[in-house]
Length: 339
Image 1: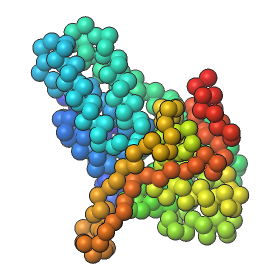
Image 2: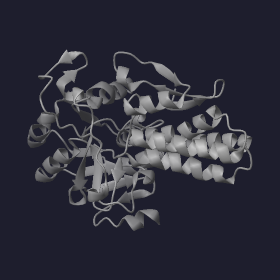
Image 3: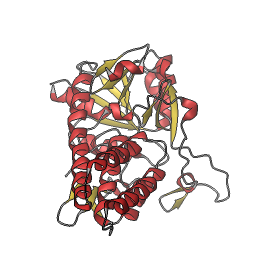
Image 4: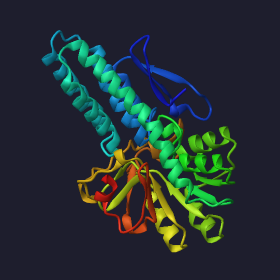
């Protein structure tokens, strides 16, 4: 199934619980807004495009759960739901984008039933468009990869980060589909190991060669000439920086030092055209993610922890932005992306 979808029989959101991968593949059902918010916050569903769909489906879910009898009351309920959804992951712009897109769509409805049907259709459209968008990103980005390339990636920007196909891994999939032999080096992506748990699992499912390394090995494997391209996704792109999983900035510096192209693959919905690095709130995660690995204690419980979920990579470290509208090269004028 897709990473996230709508279950018509129960008017609920169904999604793959990514916290269980790779040990277990389980689909869970979110029948309440609080359960969906928990799934977003705990990273059961994650990745910018998937969060956009989650935001859209969340508003649809709230519409069906609402007991309102008039349009004014249900619209009030949806605004409250939108605020709750947005608060779960403040840095990833797609979540708010998905929420706002559905809220805007229901403004044209005339009654409660119309609000529900409009919200659901708009959420389904977001999901469908995400798959088509990722295929276009893959098509454009595949041209940047040569037959025989080894690509280093960080975190997970594959189908599990999207509704399907993927952004960064979608580029790899599209290149392989075009007949190119591509190998991937996946960084483990501490502290929650999305690279080792999810990226390697995805690529092995597709029989694409992948080698797992620790995050701290990246510079060494680049110096050894084992990496041809670095390819990552993004959670938000502002005028001056790319926000992605913590550790991305380090890889960009290492790639620049070793003269390796550093590519970012992301849909237009990830672009924050009004934002700058200093205007973005970086999500801080639970200190337990560093003090523990699952149930195993790794550090003293009282140790001070700094655990930002994302970092910002300056545009001067980026060789190209790969979007559904094509590949953009420096100097990056984000207004050109909208043309």
